Image 1 (spheres, rainbow, N blue to C red):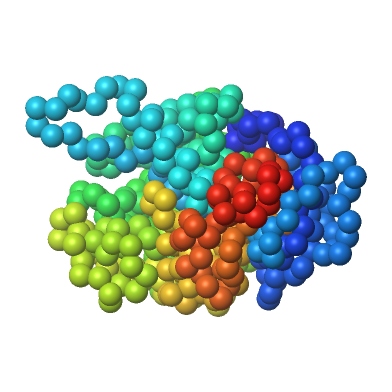
Image 2: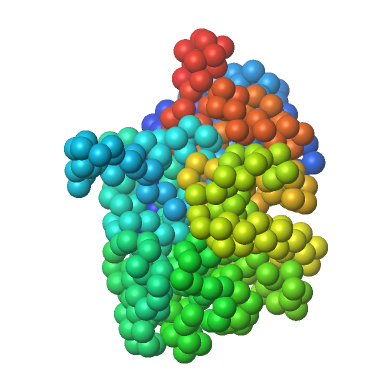
Length: 431
């Protein structure tokens, strides 16, 4: 285990009891169909993958999964988890300073209930992700593995007025380098930088490049020098081009890249990952939780100029996702929303990826994008036993991942942390 991943260091203890997961079908990313088999989970690790007829090891407890599919836990490579706070009525008691942490805890619990075992928080308020992660480490509650960028590094810009304690504004290469070091000091697992403005506020535009090339180069150089990856908020093509050329590891959004296939080809050649974040555009356009945008009457909460831009960005982002796929760019699932991983899964399929490509984006490639491909994302011996059991087939019925009643079991480092009541009865107390 790398010491450079606070998210791994802060993991809760592994299950002390070996489990033999049997009468199941294993669904790995890249496979055309699930394969009958069995899995030995020991000390939080996938210790052995056996055949369907193999006997349970003497030291393990058998868990009959009733023929259901066993697959890797989902990874959402772009969230902003911070807990959705209620709007208090006039005259009601104002929210106390510690109240938001409880809402974040509730949100993280729900991620795990949805089969999302790892999230990468690409911006949240202050130290909230680190505090929640520490609480999970010491057993306060169970949630997904949390990777955080700390604060988003940005040039002094209007976004700093809109997003509270989410930004660390910096100007000049030396200040940018210092900002990287501050995030690592605060427990960041990766660095995020704003190469362009954000389309979610009315004072910023996707063009031009928001930081200078010298500033962006300093961010990438310092993070990589210290062994950490960099993700870039990159909307406009100037920001995308600079981020790709200067070696940023993941491009977040990148919706106009379909207009520059040469940049996509560079990403494919260098192994850089695109995180399309379609669900963010749905939300800004006021499209609710539909899969097909044509099925919703838009009801945006944003100014008309931003809602209209979101509709265009959804079309451009979907076209970019398809173009990236065709040119061999790695694609990772990232919802850009709270608790929208399964929706993003279905939307990626609706907008052109195959179910198999989307499953890969939500498991193996997402883990690789986080530099955790050697730990997560596939059912392989030696990897962490972050696994889910579903009553249905995510390749032929993607909606299964949106139905909590069909997510019967979630294992986190081999510990059953979500157990559907019907499965508990079926297992007759095996877990």
